[in-house]
Each structure stands twice: as structure tokens, then as C-alpha cells.
Length: 240
Image (tube, rainbow, N blue to C red):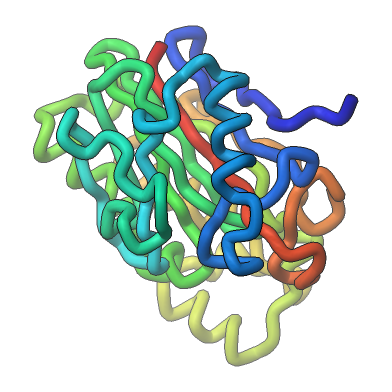
């Protein structure tokens, strides 16, 4: 049987995973939402968590982060538009999967074990250029009065550098955003760009794991770049 999701090695105090094409599309906003509810219910069953505890984003490649509290549980479960208006989520609540949608975009999972806090960031090309990772983590640090040394990060499956060729116009945008170090041989490393934003916050290399999963070349993942098959993965994280 094909694996329906892939778990990531972030911490034994949380579950961090990315679904696969074997589970199917999990986003109402693509493929007319076909069979999304059934796919989400199966994921909930596999994780032994009620569907109304899953919390989704109404993402828009923004640079916004939101804190999930008990009144937010289940937002986005019935439609894309009913999700939380942001591209990053964090919470102290247990057994509350925080969910983002992606194909080739970068999912960034994080945990602060000392504070019992987890979160996730959706960093597509536009979000990365807006420094969504830097802004989200910086806001969490300021709002929650936490120390960056207590965080651990995992960069999940994304369109790796070898699959991300860029033209001169795109290169100009990347350079203007301060990410010139991420361009090599006319290819862009979106994972590295987000890692560089973490470094600016004081994160050390040993606090970050970067996966080598490539959503373009690995058929276990959807790829918006390839345009086929239609669908979106969910990457999620929750405290045990």
C-alpha cells in the first residue's frame, strides 16, 4: 500500500507530516473540491483526531501569522474561505493539527519544546519575497516573549533548486528581496532563502533540518509547476 503521508523528524513531542498524492487532493480551492471532505476525514481517522479540531489557513501568499486558540478549532474545515486569514499558524493547544496547503511551496514546521508551542509557515515564492518566515517567527518571539534558541525547524518537501530555473526578471526580484545568495547557475533555492531569514533571527544551523524531497521530481507529491495532476498537499503539525 502506498504511504498516505510522510512524517518528518522534528521532535517526539509533536507530529509533523506532509500528505501524498496517494491520499489525494485536500484543498477545496482546486479541482472543484472534489472528494476533499472524504480525504480529510480519512486523514483525521488515521491520526485519531476529530475533523473539527483541524485548523486550516485561507492562505494568499501573505506575510501574516495567527495564533490558534480554542475558539479557532475547525476553521477552514468546510471551505477554503472559512480558514484563518494568514499564511502561518501557531498554537499551544494539544492535538490541534495546524494545516497549510501547498504543492511546490515551502512548508516550514517549528516547535518550541520548552514553551510547548508548535507552528507552521506556508512560504511560496511570493511569501518568501515578503520574508514571511522572518516576520512570522519575529512576531511570535515578540508576542509570546520566547527565546529563539529554544526553537527547532524542519523545512519540508518543496520545489528544490535543481527544479527551479529562473529568468532575468525573476532573478531581479530575488536580488531586490536580499536573496542573491540563493541563485546559482540560473536556479533559485527557495528553501535556502527561508533558512537565511531564520539565520537573521539568530537561529543556528543545528536548529534546522532541511529535507531533500523535491515536489517536482518525486511523484508522491503534487507539483503546481508541472500542472498535473491537479491537487494540493496538506502539511500539518500538532502537539501530542
